[in-house]
Structures are given as structure tokens and as C-alpha cells.
Amino acid sequence: MLKGIAASSGYAQAKVYKLEHPELVVTRIEANKKEELEKFEKALLKTRSDIQSIKAKAVGRLSADELAIFDAHLEFTNDPGLLDQVIATIEKESVNAEWALDKIANTFIKMFESMEDEYFRERAADIKDVAYRIKSHIMGVSIADLSLINEEVIILAEDLTPSDTAQLDKNFTKGFVTEIGGRTSHSAIMARSLEIPAVVGITGVLKTLKHGQFIIMDAIKGEVITDPTPEQQAEYKKLAENYANYRTSLEILKDEKTITTDGHQVELAGNIGNAKDVDGVLHNGGEGVGLYRTEFLYMDASELPNEEDQFEAYKTVLEKMGDRPVVVRTLDIGGDKELSYLPLPKEMNPFLGYRAIRLCLDRTDIFRTQLRALIRASAFGSLRIMFPMIATLQEFNDAKAIYQDEYDNLLAEGVAVSDNIEVGMMVEIPAAAVLADQFAKVSDFFSIGTNDLIQYSFAADRMNEQVSYLYQPLNPALLRLIKMTIDGGHKEGKWVGMCGEMAGDALAAPVLLGLGLDEFSMSATSILEARKVINSLSYADMQELAAKALECSTEEEVVQLLKENL
Ligand code: PEP
Ligand code: MG
Image (cartoon, rainbow, N blue to C red):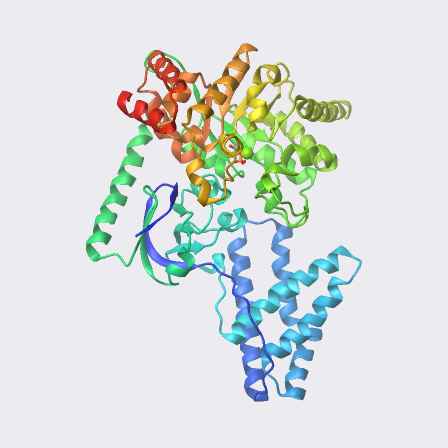
């Protein structure tokens, strides 16, 4: 049994699918021309059919522009300039096909890379990609391609990028297991929004498990069972059935309010990464969207998304949610979230570096485009905008001033916009939590981002599983910061929500409720369970319990207190 961190609840049993991109080392070997030409021909055919099937599967998920990349890749597999030279090399030098291909492809790649025009420079990456695929077929090395999976598997990887995760097909991907990452790594968050069970942070798992090996995943406890016995398989099948039944039993709460036994009402919202996720929020009884992470819009594109594309995306989400509020967070890139087309300097401590609002206040061109798209979309629903990673009042005021400028510009242009857009901020840096009463004078609302607030309060990188014991949402130190934030907001009559993963933690909910949190925003799949918990509690009792929790000295004491009282 291997132990990791349960990152997305559920059970799964299936074969392991190792997602690795092996390095292909090519050496020059004298070989039989005819055989090598045949190998090359076959590899080309396989490559073409791979690309066609990847493209077919991506239809509906990617935009027309993005799909066009596959056409460019297909063209390379038919490009006489490239193919004739490879064939000529094999014939003239009697060498192995992969070597001939490598040699010719490299000259093309170098040529494209040295061109001024960005369009051609990008083509170099395309040739690399296609050449890698052809080579892998010649050499008989299978390369992982998530969209080609057509049987039930559990994906095993070092980590999955958010776009890898976004491409997973739920019909075949029964779960995933990774070496790195914690409960709040972005692959874990994506797994919850896709409702795919995940266990993360098992060091050495890539070496331990083999491709094709049958395993059981217990993503409630965070365990992987290797080579399970038939009894274990039956036992976990039963557990999975019970879990599915429990999920179904929560569905009666879908259209209920979230209200304590003594009549205190709160709002339960969902976190989303794209317009598709809205369905999950509505299906699970979400009363709003409490966090729309817009960075996925940027990460899934091959260049900065323009105002029009962003407008369409925001409008779709707002329209789907109707009159339910939608909190959209402005671009939060940097840290562990990278954009291939916006190279950022490598930093020693990326989580403490140039990211989120810091980047947006510097690259105001990017920021203004996003704000314009958002303000235009405000006419189609109930929009709230929030800025990530605010540390100082100056940053908030600067961001708000740019927002106001674009708002005025659009009004002057005669564009229809809403006149009640709330503009708030995330509280995810301890300095902002401590000074919440001052921020509340200028911000319309707060949303507490505990994923980062914990990482910064305990100085523990959220991606590093060796320090994951410091992810302590119930530590009284954190509870006091949360209390300061809530009290600071309420003092100025502002509402305070939470969109970090802690908001969906059923054990934390009673304390957060008692501290006076107004809105809880979480992975859609946690909403009904949270409603069940809150609707069974008395607000007065939870206020008392929260007061006691604030006086504890360790997280264990708080957990003990909660277990005794609930
Ligand atoms: C957070 O930090 O708690 C948060 C919600 O933002 P993200 O996880 O995207 O950093
Ligand atoms: Mg954050």
C-alpha cells in the first residue's frame, strides 16, 4: 500500500497508464536502406492517424484556431521538402531512419528558430513535436497521449499540468496519482472540478508502479493498493457503490437554502475554471460562482486571449448562472501557473514573486483587455470582480483605478454595462488579513484564499509534499487571521466569503460558520455535503464553538474540540 494525499474523493480500480515523455536518444547506425525506408513510411502513416484522432477528439473542446494547429502538424507529415530529404539521406548514406529524420528535422528546426517572424519561430516547435512522434514510431517507443486513451485507466504522472487535466476524458480516466503536489495544487483542484478521484504526493510512485499494472485507488484515505487480491477488489467495489449511493442521497438538498436550525442563512457557491464547470455548480445546487479562475482561459490558449474571446467566455458563464452572482477573479498567473507564450523570468521563489496582481499592474495592457471584456459582459448577469494577491492598499487602489478608467471608457463608447458591479479582493496574504478593517473601506467584499493564506502564514510551499504537514487550516493561528478578515469586513458592512479549499472542508465548516463567514465557495462536488452539515447546526452554538477554537493552541486541539462537540 502506498500513502499519499487524498486530493479528490472517490474510489477507482484500473490499469496504470504512465504519462511520461521519454527522451529519444538517436545514434547513427549503418542499416538496410529498404527496411529503413519501410519503417519511415509506416511511422508516417501512424503519425498521421494519431494526429487525426487527437484532432477529432479535441473538437468541441478547443477553438477553431487551436484545432488548426493539428492541420499544420498534418501538413508536416506530407511536406515533400522534409520527406524527400529524409528519404534521400537514407538512400545515399544507408543509415537508420530515425537518424536521417533527426538530421533533416534539426536543420529545419534551426532554420525556423532563427527567423525574425514569430509565426515561423512557432513552426519550429510544431516540427519538433511531429518529428518526435514520427521518431517514437520508428523506434517503437510508445509516447503518452492523454486524448488517445480508449480504455479505463488510472493516470500516473509526476504531476499533471492544468491543461493536461482539462483534456482528460472522464469516460476512460478513472483517477490519477501523482508524485508531487498537495491538496491545493492546481491539478488537484482541477480533479475535483472534473469529479475524478485523485491521490497526489506519493514520492517515488513512478518508479514503484509499472505501466499496465492493476491498482486500486482509495481517494478518501489517500491510498493506492498495488496488486490487490480478489477480496480487496470486491471490498473496494462495495465501498465505491456505497459512496455513489451516499452522493445520490445528498441530491434532495439541491434546491434547498443553506440555513442553520436557528435561521442564520449563508451562501454556498462553486469554484470554476471554465464555462463548462458551470453545469457542475448548478447540478450540485450552487447558489453562485464564488471563484472563476480565469487563468485557465489564458493557459488553454496559444497566445494572449483577445478582448472578444474573453468577453464571450465571461458572457457565457454569466448567462448560464442567470441572476446568481458570479465572482470573477482577474488573471492570477505566475507561481505554479505558467503561460508558454508569456515567458516570465525564472525565480528562486516563484510563489513570492512576480505574479497575479503584481504582474497585471505592470502589464496593464493585459489587465485592461481583461477588465474591458469583464465590464462588457456585466450586462449579461450579476458580476463581481476580484483582484488576486493583494498585499497593500496601494495595489488595490491602483487596480480599482484602472478598472474605473475602463468602466468610464466603455460608458463613453456607449456600451451597455451594469451599474452595480461589485469590486472586491482576495485575502490570501497575511498582511491583507491583518489590515482587513482598512481594506474594507475601499473593497466591496473579501474572499479568503486559504490555499495561499496558509502557504504564506506557515511559510510552506503548497507544491512541496515534504512540508505538507504545515497545511493546517484549523490551526488557531489561521483561524485568528480568518476572524480578523471577517470582523474587518463586517465592521464596514461588507460581506466576506472564502474560496480556498478550506471552504469545502466539512470539518472546518462549523467553525467558519461560527466565525461569521457569509459565503463558502468550493469544488462543486462538495456543495451538497456542506449544505447537509450547515443545515444541521445552530448558529449560536457554532459561535460559541468558534470562540473556543480561537483559544486553542494547536490544530490537534481544535480538531479534538470539533470532534467532541459535533
Ligand atoms: C487560494 O489561494 O486559496 C485560491 C483560491 O486561489 P488559488 O488556489 O487559485 O491560488
Ligand atoms: Mg491563491
